[in-house]
Length: 176
Image 1 (cartoon, rainbow, N blue to C red):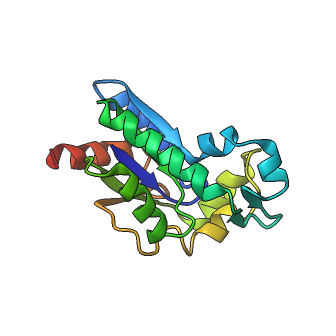
Image 2 (cartoon, helix red, strand yellow; image 1 turned 180 degrees about the vertical axis):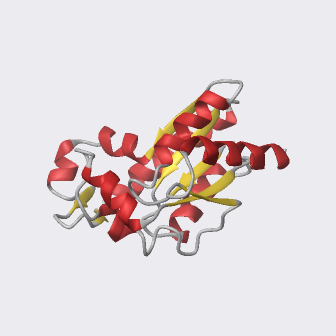
Image 3 (tube, rainbow, N blue to C red; image 1 turned 30 degrees about the vertical axis):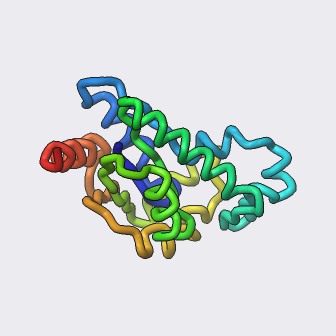
């Protein structure tokens, strides 16, 4: 399993897609965006699950953590069955988010990758995406990596998604 953690618009999904094309066997790319698309609209509209403010600040509601726990259990089950999984994640509370995911993954082998990006580049990418509220990346930047333990960092403002994926695969092969 490979976990990519970084702010919105840092390039995690692009790296994940590159990894999928480089891996010899099919791996699934499952991301936080998939989970947010799967939750009922009502839980977004009323904030009981998730709320994104006009300034891009993402706040989890009281019902979010139980859905997140189920999501993580599902991902762990897929990986435990032998299917490779790339997780595209945004730890809104840094190390606490990693601990929740690590707990759900149990003893599975995981490569933890921090994905960083220059704030101006993330802002420009965010502006091009209809599914993003301006300010999301800025609001996440101070916390997303705080207290998270990584095996590797990649910076998409200085490297292509392909070269980041190649570094990740190189690191993954040295940990086998």
